Length: 208
Image (cartoon, rainbow, N blue to C red):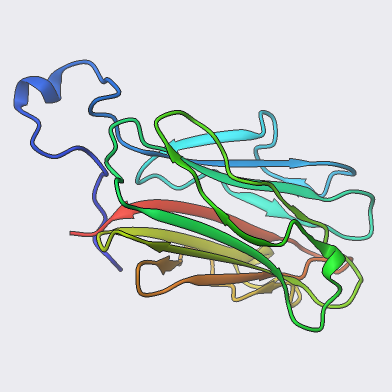
């Protein structure tokens, strides 16, 4: 496993470190926006739909369990960086249909930037609506511009493993895959009427 450190501004004196937190020395936050647009197929913290955690904590786990019920799940990501700790970093999420699959399950396909701003905001929503139609959708995370930043990805099904073949590229619960400048990470969502769903959680970290 990679060593993980708090994403804090370096060089703080003891006096400033003991002072009340301010935007000048605050750690970045990673945000997930996740909510249903139909029948309840999107489990996890959806009320409120926007949740933020301070790096390097894990985001609240969300569970995708779309099927033939009406509606799907809306999903987007953001990074709040009030102290400009992440200057130069670019992070993207790409939502694409698996070749040969029904692309209507994977709405708003393409590569979307995770905004890194001094205010809390999110990138474009992607819509997850996998069901009994053929194939599945792939979600790929990538980053560039900083060799010291990592994005850890947890992706697993009910029982901590796969959910009847629905969570492509899963890693058993408690493990994760890591995105860095040299490696992207792709997970595949093939949830449908089969039992179980897929869980996703992210962590922004820094290696030393």
